[in-house]
Image (tube, rainbow, N blue to C red):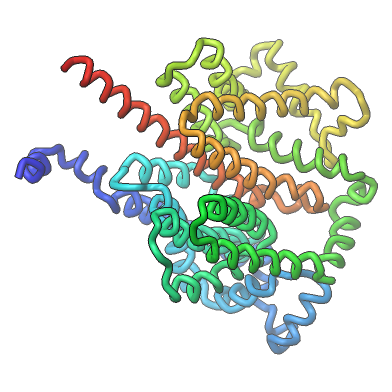
Length: 445
């Protein structure tokens, strides 16, 4: 009775904010506005709209694409049909876009934690959705956003397993097609395979039901084998090397790893500002610093936790701070270091080693901050593993001559990993605050 009275007297705005579906309703409105302002029929959308006309029957299209260009046959099957009806694509894409924060909230929200739901939505709004237009809106979303949503959906049964609930036959029937669709995208295949491997090991160690993650991991492995043996991927690699990045053929293994490392973190951490911002990583590092402030850690640890946020904030204010001579030289040294083949630290020149040294120190500071902040060690390892898996999906682009030509759409999975980690940090802050309140209450009694 008291709870009912409290709800009636509660501020209506606060009541709306706490409503389970409020964040997703707001995000739905945002998604509709974004899709209403899109300009369709550009870039690769033009090619795929005429694919069946140019290539003939579907079987002939499959054999041609598999032999000469790509292994993404499942994705392109959906693409070449949905692109014929742009309105249908818009409806589906809005639903899929909104489903991403909704699915993530369902996975991580153990009760009625409205803070988690709003943070997922807030960070998804911060995601630079214009990245999904870099190869044409329809082509890019079907090849990146849709596999992401399908991949996230395949982890819903994992939550049931962690709650010691049995899985039904329909969980397998629904999720097998989803995991095949998601893993047909190379980056998505890597990250969901890594996460299923993590949960498989966990279930085996805990002596619990491991069949579902094992089956999903097996299907990801089969798809990865299909991708690696596809002759079209090899043909595309040769063509793209000659067309986009001839210097790529001269890179050795270390050079390709460095190219993936520096190109990923350079854009993710340094390319910030009013026009090319990365407010997601800024929010994540701020939450790390906030968690450190709220925990009982030493001043030294708090300074380490502040450093990633401080550096990200520094670069986000670059347009303003360029007027300071010493900072202008520092920014210039960083901004001019990146070349088409990375920073090339193997030349042993100081100016080429400096950027990678800065990037490595930031990475180390983020890892140490996470270690200091997460008192829940299981959560720390999950956060670290998620971040590493997301990072590897973009690092792998160093092994592709289209590392630059593919533009910013290839950061999508890394963005999602950072968003998940930001929510894990918020959960840690909430738990620590609850513990402090409980201790304060006991002390007053």
